[in-house]
Amino acid sequence: QKEVEQDPGPLSVPEGAIVSLNCTYSNSAFQYFMWYRQYSRKGPELLMYTYSSGNKEDGRFTAQVDKSSKYISLFIRDSQPSDSATYLCAIIRSGGYQKVTFGTGTKLQVIP
Amino acid sequence: EAGVVQSPRYKIIEKKQPVAFWCNPISGHNTLYWYLQNLGQGPELLIRYENEEAVDDSQLPKDRFSAERLKGVDSTLKIQPAELGDSAVYLCASSLGNGKPYNEQFFGPGTRLTVL
Image 1 (tube, rainbow over the protein chains, first blue to last red):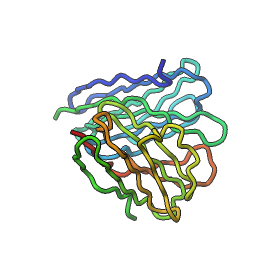
Image 2: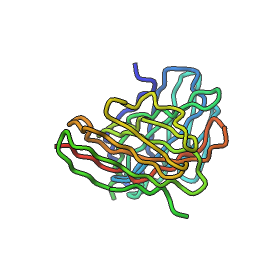
Image 3: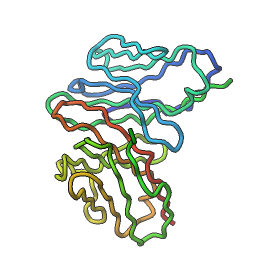
């Protein structure tokens, strides 16, 4: 079993839709959660980072963590064509430096 | 401020040939990472440097891959000899090395390697 599972998509939505992207993880030792966005032929860039259960909002983006279910989500409101990219969830264990474990990424296309 | 610089951006070689990738991290970032990203997959760590010391190279296939970070700044990743299965994107990232469990990693654009 992979440490983090993510639906690869692709996911295609109309402009203005609410997008929900999800990941599940297997080990409760994971304590830090991130979402990266990767445009085609570019490196990933950090969108959001959180270490607690609950919601964290940044503009049109909301990251949600449910540690009891080992489930993390990213919601995008009022999606725009410029949001078309691959979204990668990423997790880190607690306790000193730990490497980042990435999901496979979900490819999102927002259609004008 | 300049981001992480990688070169070349694209490389096509025949199998069994050697290849090298170069990375220049963000100024002041002590930690440097090399990742491998296969098509449709997330990045996987190959090696991590703290200054010039390789502190995590457990995922680096040492029979054919080597890396160095002389003077704790630029880094080079080498494959010799390349195999067909090495075709992938090689990403370099850097972060501040302040000992915290999480430091934002800034990624370069990657080098897309095709082995024929």
